[in-house]
Length: 187
Figure 1: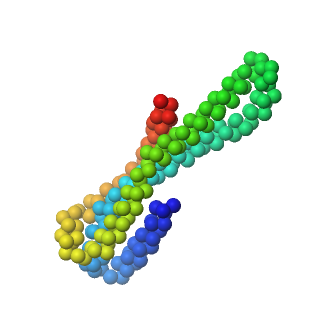
Figure 2: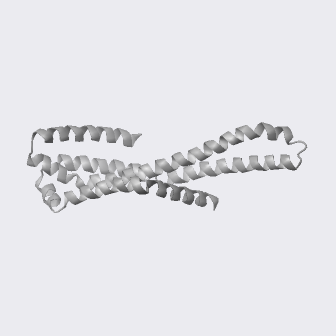
Figure 3: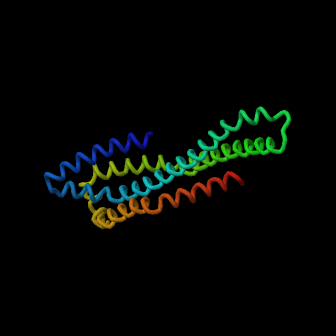
């Protein structure tokens, strides 16, 4: 939630700056764009990682919801047959136990993924603060000297490639992350 609030404030600032740059082509705005090129590249990477985490958790929650629904459906039947189980009833009880284990596995996998990505929000917040500071100090001589040595056009293209990478490989990486989380929980 904190990252969304910070992003919304930053978004409003960037939109206002962009509107201002439409009407004036000044060195001031150009220095700001050059100054924030690196942090925006880092934010693109963090955004990709956050989307990957969220998509993975959504997929696991979907699997968990299916298992939970099946468990709700099968539990009344299993409770009726627990006293004198025959072979078919034992299959039902075994299936119920398997569903319970799967639900625990899915919950543990979600917790594991959230643990792996705990670092994202603090890094995101620090990067947003650095971006803000660089935007404010963009016309300071020291910041200008540093940003002149950076190819902001190349960084902008790399940032675009990160967003395209997400569209092409996001699903694949999400599936791999699910497998890794489930294996990690099973150990």
